[in-house]
Length: 329
Image (tube, one colour):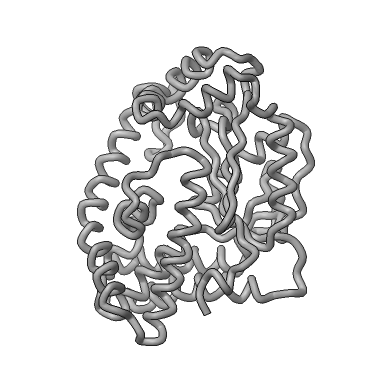
């Protein structure tokens, strides 16, 4: 059975915002996609019809990213919706999204923590009631500042265990620990499947695409097809788009990213299924080899990006969360 047949009632969700600060930045686009349908909701978060005001705000919040988006034309549809006054109000966009979430069984998100924070703030500001999701609290059982997009507790627990084992392996280079980490990452994917089968529980639950990606890489590593140290490298939508789907770089538009997420999800699950059954084709081996070849360069890119973001954070705020420093008075 293919991923398309198994995870039938599945939507993919992506949001685009002016930056990553929950309180200062705003969502300007929400993309929701199924396998055969999709929609993008543009959000008039400044309540005016002048695109220049929105671009100025974006440049103020994230100058490099905003200019990149503008240069590639990713902002044009949004600006058109703003100038034609067809963009949704924040209230309307939030209400529309909650209806989409309650009509599905599972919601696919890339890095669900970001969407969870941004959308929780949007609902809080608009007064829209949270959708009735299957899990409404964090892994410790607490309601976390209005957030509502959580992976199942069993998944969250196993993800933490897998991450801990992976950190230990990278420190010790112990092959037995590597094997334990691979098994744990693969178990995360199985727990998602078990959750989907659970007909007694009401409401949609979140599937984080990064978990499925790591589970696929772990399975490939267990077969000697991928470097076990690279299991957590190459999980971004951009990497998957370029090296798994061969669709070029991520566009960072909400609907297109949501559609790429669901295509990547299906392809990764199909690879996992064929690895498990020992029925990998020649094309499958080529795909895995292509991913493995691209991972070292991606690891280097990730290092420099993190370094750049740290210096940028220090420059703009006077401190960095990475070092755990507080702003100086």
